[in-house]
Image (cartoon, rainbow over all chains, first blue to last red; front, top):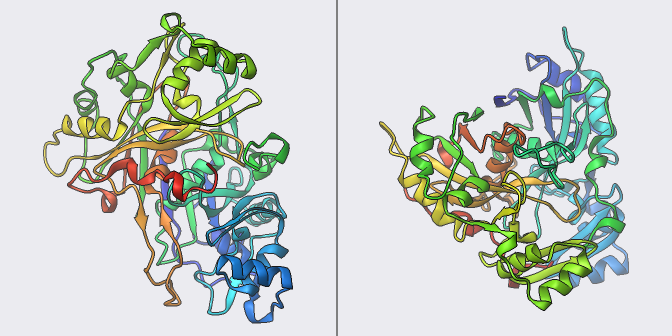
Length: 246
Length: 246
């Protein structure tokens, strides 16, 4: 299996209501088994998930937390609004579990590449966003591509951010190899590979953050692409009950 | 930037003392700016980091922990020997900080693809391993490739494993974009990208765990490849003092 990752250039500035799947389909020559990787920012913009900080009235709780962390009170309010629970609030860092169930800094609210005073929230249901984008991509022949929506998350224990999948359609997010014998015929113990996260990471390597190309094409994963949309990135969310770090 | 990831086939079964860099150089047609990605397993085998469980005498502490977690006592002893501290020991899971400073399950000790009764330990200093492999790769022309040694780690909060970098030479492990203006000329707040981890993830996508190809070639990252070996994967280790989850 060879893998090819290509940035997709030429996307216009995305505004509310943009039909991303159609825009992308017009820019790439899709082949059967391709995966289209879209960064969260433009999905949020297309879905109107943009807020002006000046429009937010912070509650007392948000103001107190903001003061403790040295954060903007309006931003802190938005983070709390987007979150189910606070995982850590220390040393200027606010890590929460989002309403969708992702654990990340600032509920994934992004202040970069949005005009001054505005921020983007994560899509409300990025799996649904991925399905909608996929529905708009009608290939000339063959199957619809897999679609992965990504965001950059930090990690405990490791420095730096990596892109991960927050929305998936038409791609197996996990490759469960438990029960597959290894080369000595021994059963592999507990190997479940987070394919969609590895796809997100691979796509980020061709994305120049300053030029802002928010779409990449990944070719070579036809064996992971499915006709049905499937369970999406929801499969990647560890439940609180199964998590040792919440 | 286009990225190409190719599995490297034809490596013989690796045994102690194998000169991996020379073996790899004989199998690939390296171009300037290439990155060679090698999975931990064969590095450990080449370095003799293989242990027979029957040779390990578990201490009382290891036996107790093993009983609590439902693990093999000898394996538990090896995990403790390889670790600085225990991060979590619950529900059958033993997460430690390794002597090298990685936080992962079972101190990275791997029971798959090793003959029955034997396990591999992580390389003692995988950055040194990466430098040694790099030293053995003498390209016909141009620069030596970047080298990344990878292992599959689980993550808190997310299901599934992804490959990450545990050893790096000749590649910038981090791309620090702080201070780079975004498209609106605003300074990007805190974007440091863990390039080496994204390279590890991309390489895993072409690796078929059952066929066992342990080497991949990543082409298209010349802008991250350096003449000097550099600080390696050590840059990816978050110190205990800066970590909110230890």
